[in-house]
Image 1 (cartoon, helix red, strand yellow):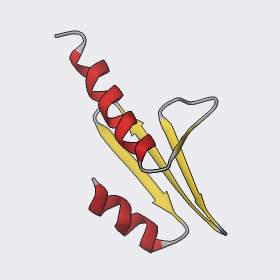
Image 2 (cartoon, one colour; image 1 turned 120 degrees about the horizontal axis):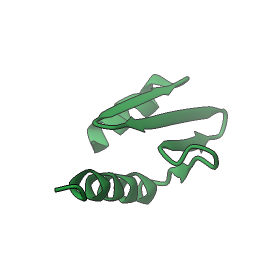
Image 3 (cartoon, helix red, strand yellow; image 1 turned 90 degrees about the horizontal axis):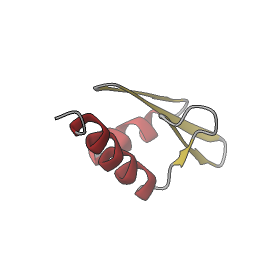
Image 4 (cartoon, one colour; image 1 turned 30 degrees about the vertical axis):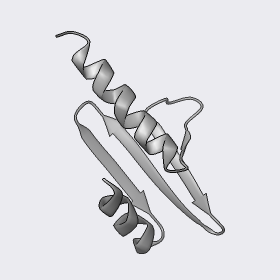
Length: 66
């Protein structure tokens, strides 16, 4: 049972990375995707996913993908 959170995070990370996001250099739970002048940030904290962007369309696309 101790491996379940790690396996969940690994599966979620692989999914997010497959969508074109890059993993943060310092914080491995931060994912970044840039579009021209726009950016979306996704932070995975335990069992929460926090995301934000300067473009609402990117947030809507992230929600649809999840």
